[in-house]
View 1 (tube, rainbow, N blue to C red):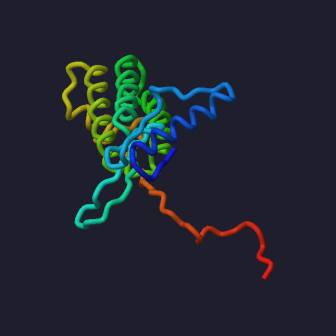
View 2 (view 1 turned 90 degrees about the horizontal axis):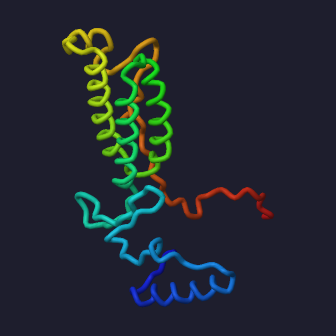
View 3 (view 1 turned 120 degrees about the horizontal axis):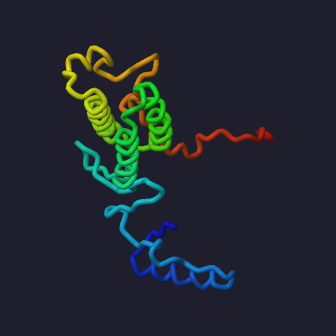
Length: 185
């Protein structure tokens, strides 16, 4: 819920809403409710929503980018898959990781996600290199690089690169949204 006004206005509105919901047998969860200023930001459905000053200008805009918790979660999943399966072929490992990464980046591409995707790319590459070193003990890096390439690939399967996903921000279109109904004029 969005309120334009003071914190007192928001708290009064929350109490009023709680009263309306109680007549329907529902209640507001105190740990899920947050009254905050947009400059402090909030986390909602994995997104961090916060107003910042745009670089080089004095204008302030609301930015939406992946929350740190969402990034930590995908990094933990990548780490788990890489650590538990050193006996798989690289092709099978890449198939598992690619499926997971494609879904995660598809969800988070509608925001300011480029920096997050680049960070995830670097982390992903390091984890794959560690996996290769665990799988092939005592094999020098030059041999591994020659066998799998700088960007890991095997058997026609290449590691998905999150940094290549272009982030698409939502822009307010207002009255430029076409109407599905024919005009009567």
